[in-house]
Image (cartoon, rainbow, N blue to C red; front, side, top):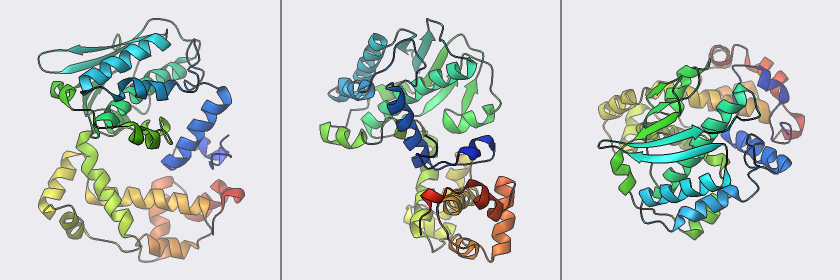
Length: 316
């Protein structure tokens, strides 16, 4: 299935390896199809094909996010025996809780995946329904911190904690009043790539980072400096710099991450010469590209291509 999804099987052994989101989504769908289970075989009852679509449809006619979430959670609690999901309201926040009520027949890694997948699906659908990010302010996870715990701030919320009795995700109470803006036509398009497309969550605070990355990529092979990108986003360079710092990143960091991801994709999927990849990514010469790529991945671009390339996936 890795090969069919366009992922070299050996890259899963490399901690520094990266794959495009589209490849991950393809693998996601293949696993679901092979298992005939949208829940990856993690739960006591399979989530048969149609599970996610009918969850979406249960919420589509809701007036507000509050009503939509109540419908989503009611549906979820009907189809799944292993977890109970609740929405609670406090004077200053809304709390989404996921409570495990049955032991899963999987190891600890499977349990972690199951809990985080469930949070991603519910939160991602809520975000899509209101057509804007619904930022999680804080998430408490019911297991010890994993080795990659430092990355949770990028994926879930600016404040994450572990060893909690149950998963609790906190977000702004006023978000519950947001109107549902999607209709059946939008749902048909959404379902083409969902739920794989929503398993990589984004936070409200990181929306500007995404816009900057998109602007940089759309300009390729031209390389637009920060002042030009700021003007395109109707911001001053100083405001752009400050707001990116608030998101925990910088213009250079976004530029480097885009270069890394594109370099990895072009090396593994195309036969472009290294000199052309270096030029397309804005490096002065191939040696500068080599040094940067080695810093990103721990190996040179030529070695990466030899190890990761899939002959059947090569594009001209």
